[in-house]
Image (cartoon, rainbow, N blue to C red; front, side, top):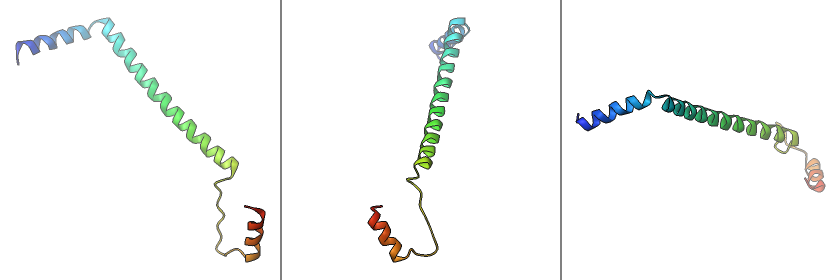
Length: 82
């Protein structure tokens, strides 16, 4: 290795031992962790609210049956505007 790279590595090691760099690295790590946590929490909260609002509205309910609807019922549905 060249002398310059050894010197740079030694200076980096020396700088990382100082309190200021440790505090900066700790603060950066905390900021990243909190940002990730809040993003995940917001995403889960949004998904839960969407699920609950869909259930409350009932707009996404689908009725299924093994028998077809009688034609009279289909006409009633069409007449009601649904």
